[in-house]
Amino acid sequence: MEQPRVGRRMESLTGRLLVAAPALKDPNFDRTVVMLVAHEDDGALGVVLNRATEVPVGEVLDGWDGLAIEPGVLFEGGPVQPDSAICLARTRPEAPMPPGFQQVSGAVGTVDLSADPAALIGALVGIRVFAGYSGWSAGQVEEEIAEGSWFVLDALPGDPLAGRPDDLWPMVLRRQGGMLAAVAHFPADPAAN
Figure 1 (tube, rainbow, N blue to C red):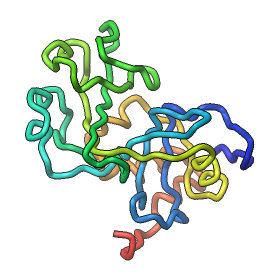
Figure 2: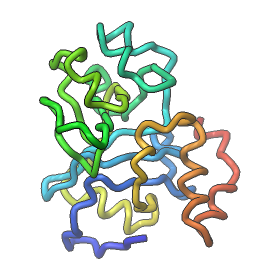
Figure 3: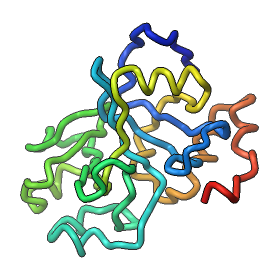
């Protein structure tokens, strides 16, 4: 787990996971797993991977439901601009990078939702669509990490499209072993929900 010095720039965390520590008291992020899709000098942007809604992708994005991995619903990406959408996708190992795909880490990246979804079918394992995003201004995410609000962990290629997103928080912590695995059993705060 990285503990940056406040005021000192850390290496880019793009493609890494921010896993909410029990000390994080913001109800927007209680027991969340956030994948950072951008982390630069002027701030960071990510999406919450484990907050599914009940709204089917096809209800809001015509034609994209065929690419959406189960559960094929929108996810709450975060509290910023909830009317906007960010799409994460995973490419097939043998397929070339599809048009409109911006790599985040390995086979995972963002997809331009103005593209024709039918043209992407053979190139992608699947997609997940997030309403809104999580954003931090310059130095903010580094401060929150230093304060102990987030664990910075490596993502596995399947994390953004996890079949059981509700189980992602304890699953990511358990696979770390040691003390972080024990955090997975920390009781939920009923006041945070």
